[in-house]
Image 1 (tube, helix red, strand yellow):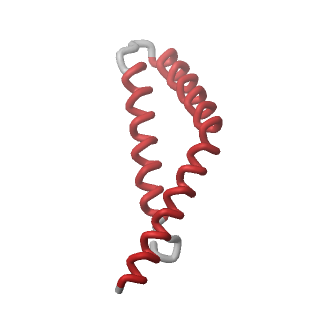
Image 2 (cartoon, helix red, strand yellow):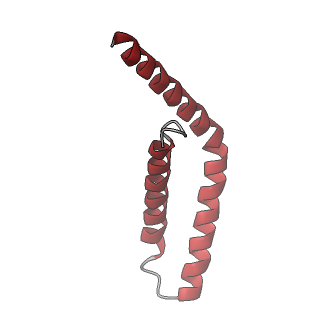
Length: 82
């Protein structure tokens, strides 16, 4: 993980976000009795979520870069104090 400069933090956040999206979709379709309709609605909701995620991906990448820079600066400050 040190080689990738803390990429585990981002993976953990991404996995948590995927779980939240999945739970939201599942709550919408879980009470449908028709399995074919359930699958169709599930795929449509997932497609909508993916489109929204693409629109927000540049914002998310900028935010990740911001936090990465802050973490680098704090590590430099900690190293300089020792």
